[in-house]
Image (tube, rainbow, N blue to C red; front, side):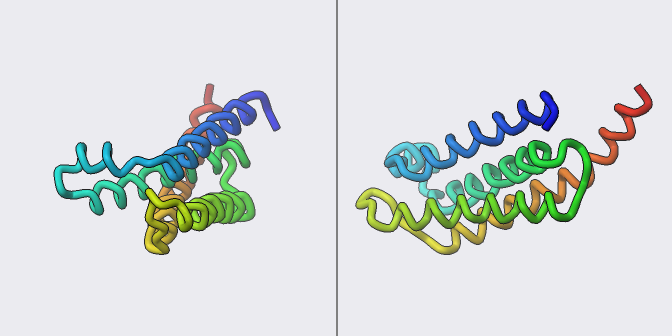
Length: 131
């Protein structure tokens, strides 16, 4: 892994920590205060966007700016595993609701992040070669 790759790996790990913390801490009060009655919409959008960012960060961390199928699959499986694990942890927590639909939204968000990476990476790689 290159030094730049290590930086992206640290960013992905820190982002995953943010996701874990927001997934296990009691957040219902702040979400309700911000959402103004649209709690489900806000949390679904939050899941989608945070996992899209995670997917993108994982892709760069794992493969640099090279688009490789195995790396994309590994990034998607890693993001999905995190989403499912958090939902399983939420199950016994009295202040959280474990919902399988959240895990599905997480995977969809990660897939979007990987798709964006697949579009952006070749462009950035070509630009960096031109100097």
